[in-house]
Image (cartoon, rainbow, N blue to C red):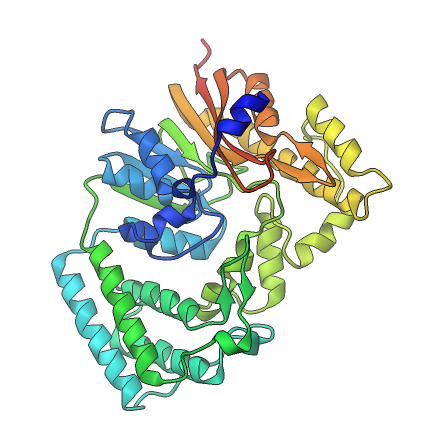
Amino acid sequence: MSATLRERLRQRADYTHKHNLGTGRHGWLRLTPAYSVKIVEELISQYPKGLRILDPFCGTATTALSAAYHGHQGVTTDINPFLVWLGQAKVSHYPPGTIAATRDACTHALALVRKRKIAPASTPPIHKIERWWSKEALDFLRALKAAIAAATEAGSGERTLLDVAFCRTLIAVSNAAFNHQSLSFKDNGQTAFALDHDMTGMFAKDVRFVLDGAADNPDGSGRVLLGDARNPTAGLDGQFDLVITSPPYANRMSYIRELRPYMYWLNYLANGRDAGDLDWLAIGGTWGIATSRLVEWERGADMLVNATLDSALDRIAHHDNKNGRILANYVAKYFDDMWIHFQGLPRVLASGAELHYIVGNSTFYGVLLPVEQIYAEMLAALGFSRIECRPIRKRNSKKELIEFDVTARWLARG
C-alpha cells in the first residue's frame, strides 16, 4: 500500500465496536475486539435479499444478526459456548408476550432483591474477585442472579433476556475500565455504586434497553452453532453465497480476557484453567495456559508453506528479541490454523460465492506482519479468484497498523 493512501486513511471510530453500543441488539454487550456493524451493513446492502451468509468466526454474532435484519439467512459458528449463547439470544425472535413477561419477571426479581427474600447465589470463582467488584456490588449481583433464577424458567426467553441485562449490569457496576485497547481496572476511588437503589435502577434500565432491541425482530433468520472454524463443514448444511467475517487478529488480544466476568457469572467457566484450555482451542488465543503451551508447540505436517510468513517468523524469532521464539510460535500457529480453515472452506461454498475477511495487520518487535497479504496468498494457492486487499481504516496512531477487507470469489472447478 502506498504511503499516500496510508496517509488518507482515518481511524474511523464508526468502523469499530463503538458504533455498536447504541445500535439495538448489536449493542447488548460490549466486546472491544468486535467489528463494527456499520462495516457489515455496508457490505450486505450491496446484495439482493435471500442469500445464505456464513460467518465462521461468530464473536458477538454481528454478521448473522445483520444478515437476518436484511432478509437473508445468516449462519455463524464459534468455539466459545458463551458466545454461541449470546449469538442465539441476539438472533432469536421475541413475541410481544415474551417481552411483557420479561418486564413482569424483572419487577418480581427486583422485589425479591429489595426485600432480601432470596438466598444469594454463590460467589463466582474469579481470581482476585475484589479487583472486579466492591463488596456491596458483589452482594447485589449475587442476590440478583438468584432472583432472576427464581423469577424465570431455565431456557425461557425471559431468562435469556434478563441474563443479557444482568451481564450489562455486572460490568457496569464493576471496576473494569475500557480506556485502553483491552480491559483494565479503575482506581478504587472511581467506584461509586455502593447503594442498592443505584444498582437496582441500573439493572431496570439495562432491562429496558435489552427489551427495546428484543422487540425489533428481524425479517430473516439467524442460526448460531457451536463449531470450530478449522472444520467449517461440521454441523453446516447446504452451501453459502457469501462469507462476511472478522477472524481473530494476530495480535495476542484474547477474547477470553473480556469475556471472563460474563462466563464465570453464567457458569460457563469454573476456574482459570478452563479459560486457558478454551483459549488454546481458539485461533489466536494466548490466555493463561495457552501461552505456556506455545513454548513446546511445534508445527505439524499440515503447516502453511509461505515465503512471506517464513521471512516474518525469522525476524520475529531473532535472538535479540526477548520472547521472540514464543511469539514466532504464536504467529506460526495462528497462520497454520487459518490455513486449515481456508482449506476446508470451499466445501461449504456455492460456485460464485464471495468472501469478505475483515482483518488487521500487526507488528512484533518492529517487524510488520502483513496479515492481509498472507491471507491473499493462501486464498490464491487454493484457487480463489478476484482477490483484493482493500484498506478500510487506520487502527490507531501507529501509521503502519491498518484494517483491511480481504475479498475473493470461489468458482467451483468442473
